[in-house]
Every structure is written in C-alpha cells, then in structure tokens.
Length: 562
Image (tube, rainbow, N blue to C red; front, top):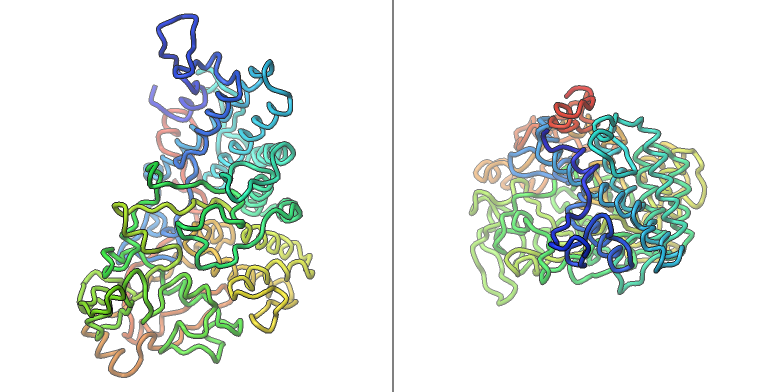
C-alpha cells in the first residue's frame, strides 16, 4: 500500500531500537512505555513545535506580491493534487496530528509521578497543537479526515471525511480545553508556546475564517480581557531579528542561526546593490492600497503626489516598502533609470546602481522592494536570518474582534477603539491623540467593513495573512484575475515617463470600494508594462485539492473542480 495519510494516523511516535526486551532507555523510547514522566512528555511536546509543522500562507499567492514575470500555482491557477505544497502541507499536518494524538492518549501513563493538574496541562498543550493543525486543514482543504486516536490499519482505511461543522466544533472544544488549563501567557524571556491567550487567539482566527462571527468575537474578546498583551511600541522594528519575544507576540516560534533554525531564501528580497536579487517584490496593488495621512485613499486625498508617491502616506507604507532616495542595507535605494550611480552609505562613495534596470536587467521590475523585517543581518551568516516566526500577534486579535463585531452589525465604541489602537501605533501616538492620526470614526456597516479590511492589508503585508483574507472575503476571484504591472523597459521609460516629468506614476490610479487599484488607463496609454497575467478559478480555488495520492489510494472524495 502506498504511503498516505493513514500511515501517519496509525503510526506510533517512536520505534524501539534497543536490544534488551525488558529495558526502554530514554534514548530508545518505546511507544508502549513512553510519556511516563514529565521529561518524556516534554520531549514529545517540544517535537511538536518543529518549524515544519507550522506552515504559513505565502504572500506570493496574493495580489500583494510580484516575482518578475512569474506566477505561482495559486496566481497562475495551475494548483492541483500534485502541487508540492498541497502534498507537503497535508502530510506534515497529519504527522503533527498523529504525534499530538499519541501524547493525549498516553499522558495518563505518568499518573504515578505527576499530579492530575500537570497531566491536564500537558494534554491541553497537545490539544492546542492538534486544534491548530486541524484548523489549517479545515480552512485550506475543507473536506478532511478527523480522528483523535491512534488507529489500526483496518480502522484507518475505514475512515471517511468528516463534515466541516463537526470538525469545527471539535477544534473549538480543543481550544476551550487548552484555554482552561494552560498558563495565561508566557513572559518576554520565555518561548511563546501554547497558552490560554494563544488558544483564544487561534480559536478566533479559525472562527473568522469560517465566518462564525459570534465565536470569533467572543474568543478575541476573551484574549483581550486577559490584559496580557499589548502592541509593540515600534511597528518598524517588530519584525527584525533583534526583536525577540515581543509583548505583541501571542504565539510564535524562535529561530536561531546557531541552531540552524533560520529564515531562508533571503536574497530574493534584498536589493541588488547589497548582494541580493530584488526578485520578489511588493506589487503596485499593495503600494497603492496604503492610505494617505488624512485617512483617504490616494485617488481621493489632496496629499497624494504621484511624482513623490511615498510622501504623506500611512507610516506603514515606508515601513513596508523602501522609499526612494533613502538608505537601505548600506546603500541609497533609487530605481530611477537615470540614477546610474548611488551612494554606498558605509564609506560615502558612489558605486554603480544595480537597483535600476538601466544598469541591471533583473533589478526590481516595478521599482519597489520590501523593507518590512529586512535588515543588514540578512546579508550575514550565508544568507540566513533568525527573526521570530510570529504565528499570531495582538494586532490581529484586535482587528479580528473589530471585524466580527462589524459583521454582526454590533457597531460600538469598542470596534473603533480596536481599529484605532492598531492605527495609532503605526503613527507612534496614543489612541486618544486623535488629532495626530486619521482615526476611524463611527459609520455604517459597509463603511467600517471597508475600514477594517484596508487596515488589515496595511498592517499585515508580508506576514502571510492576505491570502486567507482574500479567500474568506471572496475577493480572490477579483484581485487575482487582474494583470500585474511594472515599469516600462529603460529606453521607453525615459522617453514616455521620465522626460515628460511623470516619474514615478504617470497617472493616479483609481481605487475602488475594495481598495483595489485600476492601472488599466496607464497601461492602455502605453505608460506601464504588463508583467504577468494572474488567474484564479473561482469554481474550485477557494479550496485546495486533496492530494491525488490520498484520493487514489484511500478513496477520499476530491474537492470540486479538481
């Protein structure tokens, strides 16, 4: 029989390798005796925090991102049951579930040496992890197999897919149990592992993704009421390697260059002058979504100047995307085609500017590069870095609470406070200093829905949040069926944009009620260039396919359209 999901559902966590028939040394654990004391249980639980078990969505799958003239299986509508990440996510998630189930089932073996409260705490941690794993499966694949036990081969092969609502209720039950038994949170010097706050926050996330507004509201509010979290004081440095265990992080995993647990693939995000490729870049769609400092979109604000498009924008714009003529990783960044040399800031010398396409053909195709979380340490240690892997942070809880209340049409001051707390932090002021930032004011449901959605986009760019947002808002079929645009080739760019004085944007794009920019007038006028044709098949892509191997060997029912 081919290896498939059932291999992981009935596999034991450990295989004995000892020669003695009556001894089970710690280094050679047996699944029949393992988890009989605190040390063994904690080893089992620690293994569930492996990076491979905590996959996150990619901004590559959204309208916030561009990679030269390439698309992904999501943005090119080629995703299928053989797509690598479709198979890897399914496999790794069920591996984690099998291991969590093993802990939950065997933890009572330690009853002779641990108190009932200790055993409950360990079980609660495993149940939290199981709930997180099932949440990922439910939100992405929809029709999944659910089990809470270790199974025989016969039992595993008899399993059928479980109704979505039943799975959701079981996820809620695990999160509720975890919230009732775990620590409220962990201190700033401690690993942000499973906690009551994390259970509430992750419960709110899956409830929001399933449009269960009441549960999302209540879980987010429970997390807020713990009074255990606050926003990091500086949005700009929250995502750097030097910022460890932020007060804003509710649940996250540490990285370490020394331990070889790092963030890789960095050169695609680093400018070419600093030795990177500048290949994966923020899209113009994202750039135009940031509001101006008066709280208006760029097509409505008198503050927006298309010749200086970074000026007078929400501070998260320049914290997320590198502003022209500013220092970044040792060089002044300037993609202008006539800026053939730029300043190296370390020694004040001028060097060839590899960040403009008039010098380097593969410099950023749209003139933009990422700044958020990207620092000089990315160029060290063989292109690896160790920023914390933030799974969920407090800003998300605040905005989930606000969104759930808006969708329930329970619009009150708490909704405004939640949104404005996040926005005020971006401006570096107190939420009460409403003259220092464009506070969101009371409005109807439609207006506040628009406000919270644009707030999420400005706040969470490059954090893997946008993908599930456009999926659950059913916006993917709109934003991923639009062309991706960039700069004209250097000669045409000089002739048609630079010489007439139209750099950087030759026109101000119109922004619709979904915060989506319309670049087609500039394109039709020959002032910008098509980079890619994005595609999204709304008849099938709101769910991922079940991996083909599972359908062929286990008799699972494939999702529609695949």
